[in-house]
Length: 271
Image (cartoon, rainbow, N blue to C red):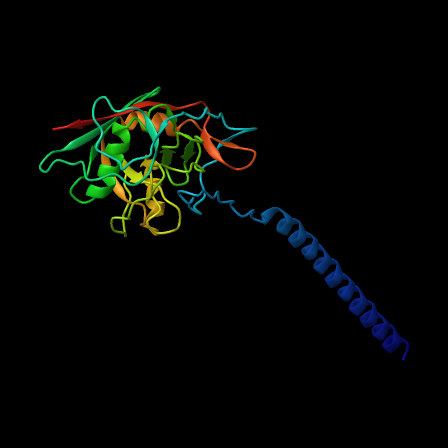
């Protein structure tokens, strides 16, 4: 009987010890998992918004951060209170119009736009076949010196673009030329070198702002496909790449070039 009691006591001690060991192991596992969970939480990628070109939710490479982006002064211009006429070589600078321009394209002619910037020149062949109204609008605005002195105020590496065309505010909040134009189609696919009209999320809301597709990240806009492509860069892509490389983000989350990039003039060549 004495031996039996000793055996029972040994079994009880073993069970207590085993339970204690299991509790210690479970506590250790809980601590380990808790410590790992605290370090593995992923911060959602913030997406910038714009009244002209919505930013993609695709995560971009880490960019430099600054307190604020450089700002350009507004470029004053005149107001055309009568119906818009086709510009001439002596047309004054006009930034506000009463109505959209008439058709100023000559049948059978080709049109090229040359952007002279403080970073170099960019030459674009305008598509007057697929997008005649959009190309015509840009040509007329350029003929009235609308774009002269304007800043390329926005860069966005997540969608690979450079945006400009806002003399009144030098920002995407610009009121535009005083009118909007109709969208010419939809379902666009965006490629490196494309010159594209910016617009709001509303249909037929483009006016004067534009953007260049600089990298393949511009294809992130393919799911929208509503921004009208009206030109293709024929030379100066390296200039655009240099400008996009200046991209920084400010404290508010807006992105743009770290130094002022100015379009000195946009000239149109007809041939």
